[in-house]
Length: 300
Image (cartoon, rainbow, N blue to C red):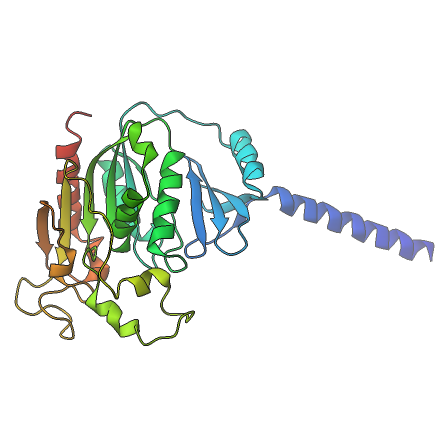
């Protein structure tokens, strides 16, 4: 009997030690691709909030969970584990992914931008679980927490361009200390998307279309970027009367029509012969982006 009690005590001690070790260790994650919004992003970490439970977690640069719980708890752990590196005044490139995508979808282009010597941030946001207005508010809150830069250039893909326009609609206090030096829109449906009409018959709450996707069915009531900010619009298409998708009217990239990418204000424009899903990683897109950055950041 005494031997069994000792065995049980030994097992309990080992299990307790294992649980404590797991609590201290970093747990791999998928990086919050669809159900998390980034609250803050540093050189070696990011703090995220879950779209449903609203709890926070701290990830390292390899997407391993270091801590979870309240926002303050994650911030405290981040200060201890990842000492803040103050950036010198300069230009930050913020990259916004598209609908049902994540920051991982812009990784190739981000690497190209980094190789050209630019500092970047590519935050995650729950594109399939919020309205465009809610996403614009998220972006303003995210930008308000960025310090160490006096200028920002946005590279937006698809819905990301509308998220930025929505942010302009809600008041951008952060622009008082960080001016917008330029915007690249890649495949952004600035005039709504005829393709989105295919989801019009689906009931609300279905697993295919989220709030933002449904809003693309109607004309968009969003302010365009201020006229003093240079904008490059990059669209995909065939340069012909017909696009990649015969269901859509006119030239298109299979998802967004070329005409839908246009803004009413003046802007630069480039057409690249490729599909919507391949547009963000196309070599011509990379060259166009790097050329625009070189022009807008020439006084950096």
